Length: 387
Image (cartoon, rainbow, N blue to C red; front, top):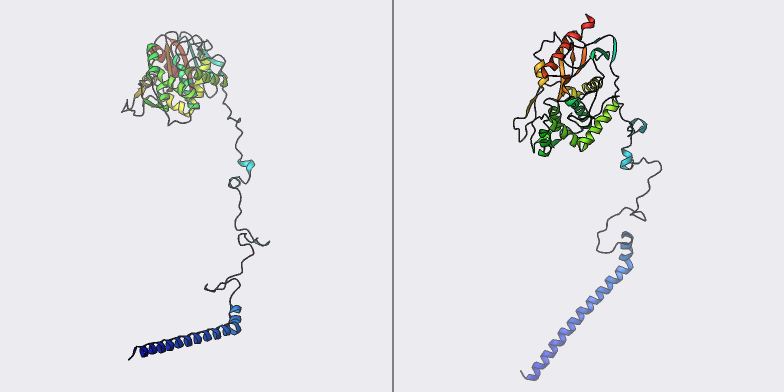
C-alpha cells in the first residue's frame, strides 16, 4: 500500500471516531436536557412541598419541633404553675423561723456572780482563847452561815499559801481550754527557789497540762505552778493579782488585797479569817476547785521530764486522815506558812453530827499545832452547842 493510501485510511478512521464522539456527546446533552426539563416541570414542586424551610440539600431531613423566637431566654412560667424550688439566699435559709426565740443573749449579759455574806455570830457562838494554839480561828456552819466558834476572826492576817485557794479559783474560772499546756522555764523557777518558796517539782522545758498546774499549786503548794498560771491567764503575776482582787471585790470581801499569786510575804498582801472563809466557800462551789482541794494524792500526766508522771500530795490531808475526829471528817484543805504568817490553814468538812463546816486558823507556831486545832474544832467544838 502506497503512502497516500495509508494517509487516506488514517484520515477516514479519525473522522469516524470524531463522528462517534460527537454523536455520544449529542445524546448525553439531549438526555441532560430532558432530565432538566422533567425536574423543573414535575419533580421540583413536589420536593419543595416535603422540605422544611431553611433545610439545605445533603442534610438528613427530620421533623423538628418549633422553637421559640429567642431560644436563649427561658419561657416564662404560666401563672398557675408552682415553682420547682424556692430560690432564697443561703443566709436566709439559715434564719430561724422565730428569731425572737433563737436570738443569742446580748454580749453584755453575763451570768450573775454568786454573792456571799459574811458568817454571823449567834447566841450560841463560842468564843475561844487558850483552848487553841492558833492566835486566830473561825468555825462556820455552812448551811446556816453562822459562826459556831471563833477567836479574833476579823484581825488582818497574812494568808501565806492560803492565797492559792483564790489563785486556783480564778484559774478555774478563766481557763477555757484545759487541753492546753504551759512550758515551764528556769526563769520562773530560780527566783522562787532563792525566795525559799515551796515548789511542786516541775522543771525547765516541761510542758505541763494546765490542770496539773492547778493541782501543783494546791497539793504541794507549788509557787512555780501559780506563776505559770498567772502568765498563761493574764500575762504576768501582777496582772493576775488584779484579777484576784477583782474576784475578791465581786465576792463582797471587805478587807482583802492580793499582791501575788503564791502568798509570798508582802505588807500589802492580806485578808481576814472571815474573808478567807468566803474565798474557800466560793472555791467549794466550783466543781474543779473542790475536786482539787479534796485530793490527797495525785499523779500528773507523763511528760518527757517525768515519764511516769510527777507524784504530788496534800501533806495536811495525808496527816489528818489518821487523826481521831470522833466521826467527823476534814474533806479538803489548803495550808500556808511564812515566817510572818506562821502556820495557817483553811479547810472544809463535816462534824460528827453531819454539820457542813468551814474552818480557818492562822498563826500557829508549828504545823502540828495547826493540825491539832483543826482536829479539835471539828471533833470537839463543832457540835458542842447541840449537846
